[in-house]
Structure formats: structure tokens, C-alpha cells
Image 1 (spheres, rainbow, N blue to C red):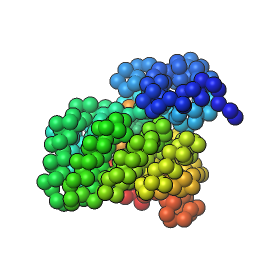
Image 2 (cartoon, rainbow, N blue to C red):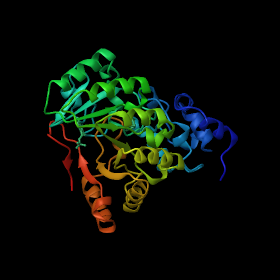
Image 3 (cartoon, protein in one colour):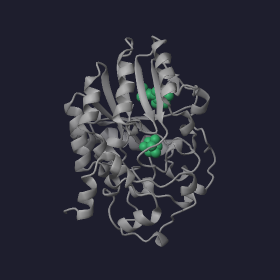
Image 4 (cartoon, protein in one colour):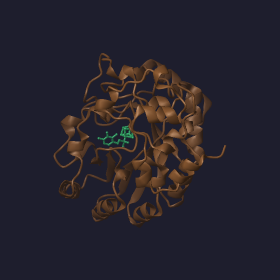
Length: 336
Ligand SMILES: *Cc1c(COP(=O)(O)O)cnc(C)c1O
Ligand code: SF4
């Protein structure tokens, strides 16, 4: 099917402009998807604390007229978000306790996570950061310098993880500056970037970005976040090829989500499609129990059953590790 003229024009724009054009309200998104908001359990109130945000590149992967589309479910604000579920709270992974003033989360041995920016190109309704004051933690240039000093001073740190929010929302200039500072730290071996942008805003993978990453003497690893094979559009494939062909190792983490990918065939297809395009399945996370996300929960028993089915169907290297985050633990916890 060929694209309408308006979409061709949109995708000819640069990534910043595409981001500025992202859907930011229920009406516009529903009109584009040929859905009637009145027929859906949508909630405007749910957008007050956590706005709707969906780039067209992601919306274009949603099946028109299908209220149960697994991609739509990830981004549509619904009434269930306002319900209280037992065991769900505002800091499910204990990040507030470990956050230091310089934006460095140093919870695990040898790795530190930098919160570079609080914002994302897409607002995933299941996100554990939806209630988190990440905006306060994000790095100003001064804080960034303090973070670099922190890493410089601790020779046990061999890997820096740029996270957020989405670190690739930083400008190329800002990212280049940060990576150059990290390049100077001798004991650092790897720079890892946790980003959903290659999937939801593939236009972000520009030649300039590739140059910045290629110039670093450190190994660069990108961990994408893709939950369903339908997210892997031709544009996504092009972006991932560009990364892969420039020597960047690609892994994927997904979140196990009710109504999105809680089905072994869907999980198998995701793994195979990722691998077909050079991305190795890394983690399948159990949902972090953040307020507003209870309707996405898949029980641990069901999760184990699903991963066993995936294991029975696929080669071992296509089976992601089923993990959960436990506050205070020294690593992610293997569930299976
Ligand atoms: C998940 C996480 C990491 C990375 O863990 P890996 O198992 O190496 O992928 C590092 N630091 C923090 C704070 C994390 O939450
Ligand atoms: S991209 Fe990641 S951090 Fe951003 S809203 Fe989605 S799940 Fe949360």
C-alpha cells in the first residue's frame, strides 16, 4: 500500500520536526487510526499526569480501525490507568533511593546508569517512569561534568549506560560532547545506550549520529526497546542496518504486557524478526509495578509458561532472559 502524500512529506522532515509533529491528543490519534474515541475506554484524565505522545512513524504501524491493536494498547490512555491495583506504587524499582545528585544510578557492579534526559519520543502507558520525577534528575551540563568525574574516580566502572528518558533525544552536539568526555576515561570499556528511538523514531539514526558513535574508541552497544514484531517497519530496518553496518552491537529488551505480547507465537515472531534484522533478544522484563499500569500485568506463573513455550519453539539464542527488577538487588533477577 502506498503512503498518503501527507505522510511522505512528514517522513521527509528531519527527526526534530517529526518529533514536533507527534500526536499529542486522543482525538487526533483516533482520527488518524479511523477509530471513534467514544467507542473506546479512553481517558483524558489519564493524560493530565502523563500526556499522550506518539510519533507518526510508530502510529503508522498500528492497524487502522482495530481498537485491540497491540501497538495502540501501548500508547492509548485508558480508564484503567486511574484504578489502584494492590502492590503497585510510585517507585517500584527503588530508583529514588539509589539516585545520587549527579544523575548517576550506581546499583550494579561495574555499570552505572546515567539519566541524561527525562523525556521520551513516545509515552508508553506501561512505563515505570510515568510517576517518577526524572525531569529533576536529568543532567544539566554541570551535573554531567560531575557524573563524568564520578565515573573517572571509580576504576571498577567498566560500562556506562546512557538512559533516561531517551538519551538519543539529546542533540548530536550534546551527545558528542558527553561521549568525548567518556572516551577520555581509560578504565571505561563500553558505552551502552538504552533507547527506543530506533524503533519509534528511526529518523533519529542520522549519519551525524553514526559518525559520533563511530569515532568513539569504546565499544558501543545499543539496546533497543521493541515489544511486538509489528513495530519493525521498513524505516526501522533501515535504521538498524545503518547501526549494525557501522559496528554497533544491537540487543533488544521488551516488556511482557497483557494484551500486547502475552502470547508465545507473538513472542517467537518478535524474536525472529528482531534477529532477522540484526538485533539479538536480550531481556523480557516482567512489568515494574508502577501506579497506573496494573492492567498490563502478566502473572509470573503465566510468564514462565510463555517463556517455556518460546524455548520449546526456538533456538536458545532467540530466547530472551525473563527477568524482573527487584529494589535493592545486585542485578536483574532471573525469573526462569
Ligand atoms: C538494568 C540496569 C542496569 C543494566 O543491567 P544489565 O543486567 O547489565 O543489563 C544497570 N544499572 C541499573 C540501575 C539498571 O536498572
Ligand atoms: S520509551 Fe522507555 S522510558 Fe520512554 S516512556 Fe517508553 S518505556 Fe518509558
